[in-house]
Image 1 (cartoon, rainbow over the protein chains, first blue to last red):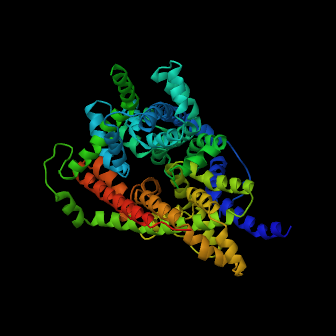
Image 2 (cartoon, rainbow over the protein chains, first blue to last red):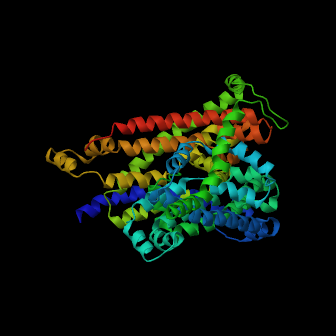
Image 3 (cartoon, one colour):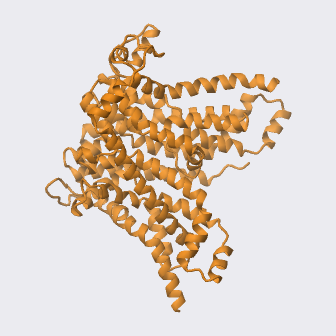
Length: 273
Length: 292
């Protein structure tokens, strides 16, 4: 009983901090749902008097936001799918198999980890221009498959799996692909879930790379689209917040559905904020 | 022999998709990035000019401004993030398992959104009009209104404040996990000597968390050094009189608005050297590991 009483102030402080840190999100949704006369009210009111979906209707009618969201789903989804496949394959080879050149390859991969993305941005832009892939979906997707964080994640995880199961499968006549497909892959499910969530979030939120590669607004992912809304609506904050709200909802839904994998992802090396 | 060849063949097949993409879109670009930093490459062509770009940068007032802004932003934001994460995690840890899960999720939720989206909300909060939320808050205590992002004196402060006012959920999770694995014996010994909760926290918990603190220090510093979206959105890419220009913002505009690819690459190399220096510091510090 006394310990509950002692904890009350702690809960009060934490809840207050939680409310403050969620407040910008609340303000975003509130502004998006407010009629214009309330958005520019002095002083602003933090409890709504009247809510409307007018901004949402106007946004869907005058901007390609649905198309942008679709582009983002395709870009982030395709990149995530390939990462799950390729990173688990490479992680398995680096963790469990012996082959000439393995250490050199792994060392090369390791050596680029501290290089900031801004160093490769300009050369990748040149390469895509040479390949004729500027302003195309493959131009945004393919370089996204080259980051190596997932290979480390999968190697670390697969190393902890018992080798006996692979041997047993081989004795039963399984091919090497079948060993990967039917032994390694099912056992790696927890790590694959973390990898998938981590990758999807990363490419859902990507900004500078698609901004540089894409020209055609019809191909924009939603983050780049949002930034262009600012030029269009300037200080029409009701519309801007509505765009932001529409972009926020899918990622927050993913977070609520897969919360523990997000938290696990931070622990295995993905602090983003 | 044939079996061995077949085995190796499979190994290469497993590694090949990732490794070939890595070579073309990471390894070669890294090499090319360094090469570009030594050329006066522009939209038309480039020639080798040695360290000329770096000399240009050293004398360029806008680059100095960007470097200064980035260092100031990083110093304040990282100090605030570490403090907030440590305090919040320390408050969460003694609570029950269910409360811990709840609070971790609560503090992480605002961070799942993209930097662009978050910056848009802060731009709205810090807009110069009297109906802006920041000005309303000032008005409530009889101050303001300020111009915030509309003023060359206050724009950087608004950008920094927007980052400081965000609880770093990732750091909270990592600190919380680290505190959970600290040995209890030291605390029991301190109990015997009658130490209060605050003393135990300052003299036992905080020092034992040094490895986590160093790790977060490096990660948060590297992230803060790469600040871009916040400035790009809140202050239209640099603010009045370049008041909020940062290194990555300057790399972007130098390369993709002015076509000076060599000069922009030199800036990226400076960014890389900072990252390497931080990584080295981290490894050195972690080698002298804390003993329980």
